[in-house]
Length: 264
Image (tube, rainbow, N blue to C red; front, side):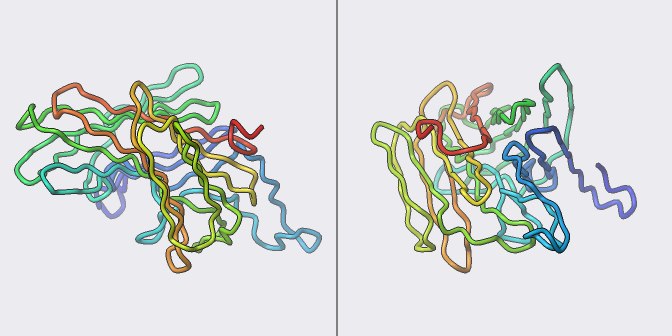
């Protein structure tokens, strides 16, 4: 979708199938600003014989309608400078369709990291089984010997309105050499570990789990529960790579009905 009425330059991409619905906002660096887990098969019907009454909206996990709400983006840092891709504009350069998947390519984003100039491109491969692959690829840099750190970050919650619903009972987990888990209690607690296999959140209110997994090579993992006036959970994969053309960080986001994989 392009804004031809007001000529703002904004560009959005919507994707929908039987397992998920998402919105990618090119005005925010190609970040995911809305994510609905249809795979959870949440029943939503309205009326006086319904517990929902008039609220027929399907629950979201990511919804960035307001500033500082939930979003899936990437932070890039080097030489003491850190910037989110969501603060930069990009454009969709190509959308291709194959059986069972859609590939979305974006134009590279130019980042100046305290003198290190990097062009970084984001590609999404959306599978119809509820799996999303995210590629962050270095297109060019001013110093190929430099190191840059990429942080895949999903700030999430659940709800059907502009405000997150009750997050108590949501479970966050780091799965690495030693599994770590906490239950969301609005206390602002954090957990981190190196070389994680995956990190994830299970939302019992909609019986849905989301798993964020590094592909190809291990990454460090970090999870955080929010507090009452910022009631989101954060899942983060952290990877440092050389700023060389063609280097990539690939992550996998999976939505599933039910609890964590090893809990079934």
